[in-house]
Image (cartoon, rainbow, N blue to C red; front, top):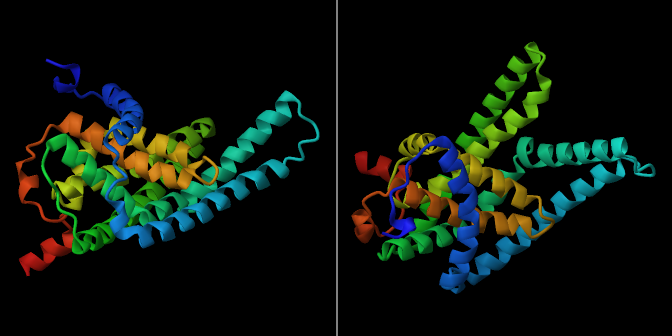
Length: 277
């Protein structure tokens, strides 16, 4: 039996490393299977999104440059350098997290994320997953809903962590714990694209993601770092994050994929609501 065919024994640490190494696998998978093929059908939208991504990337780069300049780096001693790095990280942290910039990037690039996730699952399962305009609209609506939930929850947890650690005078751990929380929710947004194609409702998707929290933290953490790459990061992160999340979840979950053969479009809570009415 090949190593990739062996069942994954899920523990937090194993899931964490699986999520991290899934980015390397994602790069190889994208190259080997030419996942970008088939995107010409919505070329105009892709061009627009690339422009938006470049603008967001320039904004991130400009923010980091301002942080460096504000340090007055005429003295480059060790203390000054460490202080500069700390402030650069803090400025980027505020921009991408509290400013919600990272979620804005994912909303704009949902059509690209969905394409890469869908193609990845098609290749892994050997089953065609039809892509329709209605399906893309449903995916975009769901992405917005998931982003709102994630942004709200990470803000609540971040505030609670800040208050508790402030009372305990453990401010040193605040940034680390908040980053872990925010990496988890960012990872959840990527994983939900995978769960959406499996026709899981958002609540079911949240529950499944909690079971593999290590994967979510790893996927979100690396995606955040990729977003810090000047200009190109806002384009690279959604693509690699989506494929890495799909490869990792496919391995840990090993679900029954027979349902995909009958799936004409992704599930959405909006459609489920209409059916019940």
